[in-house]
Length: 558
Image 1 (cartoon, one colour):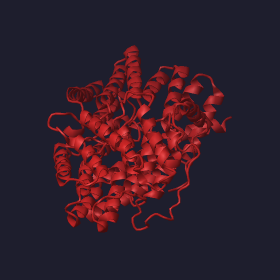
Image 2 (cartoon, rainbow, N blue to C red; image 1 turned 60 degrees about the vertical axis):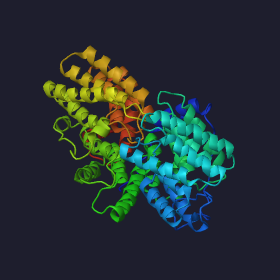
Image 3 (spheres, rainbow, N blue to C red; image 1 turned 180 degrees about the vertical axis):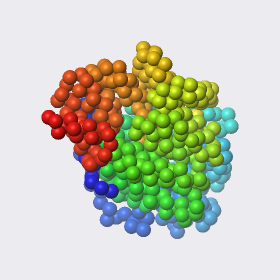
Image 4 (tube, rainbow, N blue to C red; image 1 turned 90 degrees about the vertical axis):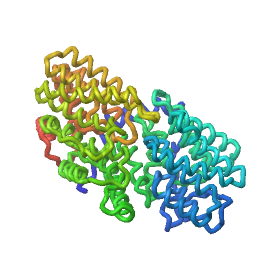
């Protein structure tokens, strides 16, 4: 792997601490002092953590049922479904096995079920209800998943997700000693949290529930997993660092558990930890898919590759990033051609060109794999057209930029007309891409005032929308692009303010650090420039990019 990449400099850490202090007062004190995990009672054969979920099903299926639930808590949905089906085969009267199958088709934090998935989940939920769970507790679980699938032909996803939340909240209230009910309640809160709520009220409510359970079930995979999701925001990420460093140890057999800590590592600029996390995740996913879907590429692998490409590019490991690009391009069939696959297939080539500022390469990007159902995740396809538009505009080809911008506008119109189900504002995210691309097109056409206006609007919108968990970060942050424009216009102090704003939400971004150093030089602030050049060199060690050579020259001359 080469040398270990360092945490960003005190400049970045200071901004993190400032944000943390601001948000810590109203937040629950989750993991403020951390928790040690005792693995001596974990099942070494399972390697999925410890789940205790008693049911009225036959005793001989109890261990397999709990293993299936453990898969569920680490979003190993296919593995969970296979395991629940095996339980149902051994105990056909076990209503909770059908509950589990129904749960495996509902992915609260991911994309909503496709029509086929919805039908399969609804059939399982209805079968669970028909079998008749014998205890009030189990009846509550069956009723909760039934609430999600009920009237799916006339109610939208958001409405049904809120119905599930209400049902599982009632279950947790009626069963106060049932950890599973509380943990699923926390997940439901995360899956329905309003994206426009900058106070993160539901996320903090979920974290408070998990904090209560953590000392009682320190090896439970869902607790660590959902704490990470609760705090997967720039202002809160530091609170999840203990959970991030525990989750993979709790459930090392899960590709998702190996990957998930990197959400926090990326938020904090801990690049080597993020890289190691996703290397392990991709390897685990490859083992799974080789067994279950020989010849295919794993959904989890593609997701990990996008995070790997991002981490390698921030740390100037361009050769390794190029290997990730080649591996992504070579994937042709998938175990599950879901939204994370589409996102990675579009994002990795875009990152490769844009992060390295290879504008002509970006403008000439080939269309992504045509066999994927792009109509299901057109927001991912927008990344491809954004790269082409930005590359063409920065290359001075206004006509090509306008053509690519038209494609983004078409996709945005479709998203506004038929917004994807789920809490995330994909239409807003694509609109931010459109505004950013239009801003650089305006710059290419020498309309500088319009360019600043458009890029400012893009940056503000992107900040409001935030990033979706499927992505490690924007292929190029809109605020960084605004800073680039201000730098080109000779506005050093204004550019520096924008670059530093990027670094507060995305510590350790290579291009933002380099831009901030140049902006500080332009503004006549030598100490600030030196501080950022030092951070850049620490970030990349012995990398050989042009920007690093300049940083070393500046540092050597003073």
